[in-house]
Amino acid sequence: MDIKITKSPTTRINEVDFDNLPFGRTFTDHIFVCEYYDGEWHNPRIEPFHNSTSTPGTMALHYGQAIFEGMKASIDDNGTPLLFRPERHAHRMNVSAARMCMPEFPEDLFVDALSKLVYIDQNWIPKEKGSALYIRPTMIATDEFFGVKPSQSYKFFIFTGPVGPYYTKPVRLWAETTYIRAAQGGTGFAKAAGNYAGALYPAKLAQDRGFDQLLWLDAKEFKYIQESGTMNVFFVINGVTITPPLSGTILDGVTRDCILEILRSEGKPVEEYAITIDEVVQAHKDGTLQEAFGAGTAAVVSHVADIGYKDMVMTLPPVSERKIGTYVKSVIDGLRAGTVTDKWGWIVPVQVEELVG
Ligand SMILES: *Cc1c(COP(=O)(O)O)cnc(C)c1O
Image (cartoon, rainbow, N blue to C red):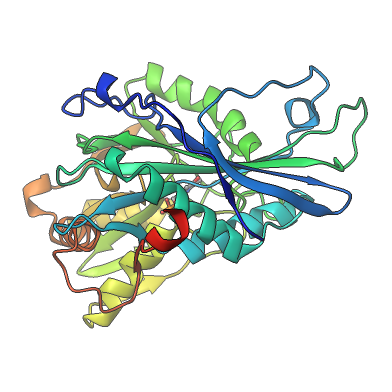
């Protein structure tokens, strides 16, 4: 399908202070939009960024058929915009769509739309190291209807915004034993809007007690570790890097996958298994818990300062001693900046000039 392009006659770029970018509040000049009805996707197009109007009956608002992706584009020293594993995001969007009974979006069209959109708004990609253009593909149900059933019509859109380097101070996690994020058979593996709504209240309770985010445990026994906020989690115990397996309750994070690949390709010991909170407690007691970190597109790696669980708080070694988390972050940041050799083929340079004009 050909993407129709209508360029904005004006730009808002001069209104933006690139040295002080708040995360997620600044949007670029263009948006990609496509609609689904009569069993097909129609009219893929790039237009000047605009608000959408919707009826109060919009089904996404009532019954939660809404999914999204989060990814980043960067720029190398030659000024070429770079995408990071776009096909994997396109595929994951369709995994989410299938679970929420939404239509698949053609993966080649997803990557094509993304490339052209990023190309057109490439001046918005911040150049400072660690900064990026954040990209938000979204799909929502648009039928106007009372009653629970799959919508017949959908809207797919991609919009983007520059984000500054995401310097996070090490996070304090609370291992949650009352509320759950995802149960076996549920929607935990989908990047579906409702998963985040359900997590807000327990996260707020933990924040009121001085923690930043939750460390989710399994829904049955509150024993097996799942993930944290919008990040997958890793532990380094006695030199072995451990992360929970893709069991259907956690998101198949692109950053998680990169970290496993990077460590494996260097022969470092990594294990994907159902690690329990008790093992983490024991390792902390033994002095073998060397690192814990969250992994996701936004921060790449967020070191964990301490973990609260029941009546204890486990404090981890200082960040200056965190070899694995610091190393994998430097590799991924370097790949994005074009300064680390991409032996995995994850970086996709955007070269669409002849198509976009
Ligand atoms: C998006 C997300 C992640 C991280 O995925 P990346 O592809 O690495 O950004 C992890 N967990 C949840 C729940 C998420 O929504």
